[in-house]
Image (cartoon, rainbow, N blue to C red; front, side):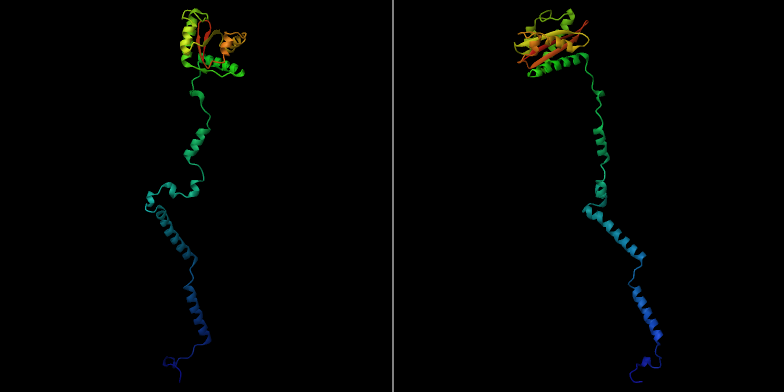
Length: 238
């Protein structure tokens, strides 16, 4: 028949139901070629993340390899600041511990007595508006020698077996202006000796005026334990 191709001659036309079936099959094939199943999508994302994960350390280290990176660099920043390091925690614990005074040697009775007398003298001076005295170790050595000499005769003196106060104390102080107190202490009662000195009247030269001398700045306090008491000498210097 005119208008028909040679290939279509003698072939009956498709029915409407057959055409609908062919169209449905073609549409399914097209949709299937563009839909990715959930399982495959997860695999693709995992592959992409693995690639990025391998690249990040190399990019962060620049020219260095991943093995050259330090542990601090490889750890996330959140973990680095979450808690102090073990060294920091240990340091805090050490700083918080109370100081152990067991390693500090206690003062001997003689040293404690000397320090106590210095404290009492300075308390009396400061209460009257005077300058506190400082302990002079070289003068203290001279005072101890005199106290030791007194223990040999069992009485206190200024001029005696070891010479006179002027010869001892002027040389120790480095000036002719000096003062000397000496006394006995029983039962380590330093306060009693100081009260005895301070109970004296205000006179030009006595134990009290030596303690309260406004021009004195240094003192040497030397104590020695004798057979009958503790002997204590105080040498005051400008």
